[in-house]
Image 1: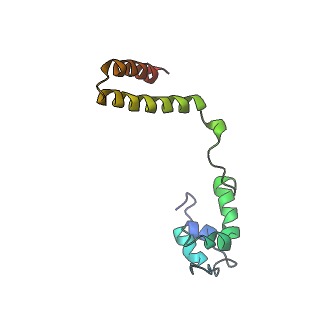
Image 2: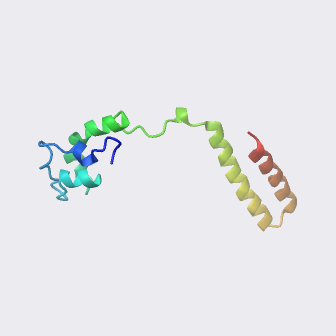
Image 3: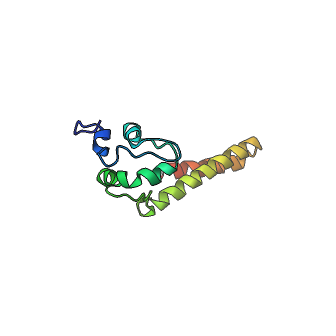
Length: 116
C-alpha cells in the first residue's frame, strides 16, 4: 500500500477501465490492478494506455530507459573484468603447478584489488 494509504488498485481503477479484458488470456483490468501482473504479452496492448498516467507519476516517464552508460564508471568495470580474468588465470596456473607464474599473478591481483 502506498504512503497515501490508498491501495494501488484504487489509484488505477476508474469507471472507464474497470471492464477492460484481455482478449488473449482473459485477465480483467480489475484483476491486474490487484496483482500488478499481466497475464500475457497482449495485456500490454490492452491495458497500456490505462497504466501510462500511473507509470508517469511513479517513474517520471512512461518510457523505460535502462541504465545509462553516462552513470557507469567505465574504469571500475574494466578493473572488475581484469580482476575476474586474473583470478581465473591464477586458478589455472595453480592447477598446472606453475607456481612462479601463479605468484606473479597473485601479486598483480593483490595490487589491483588494493588500488582505490
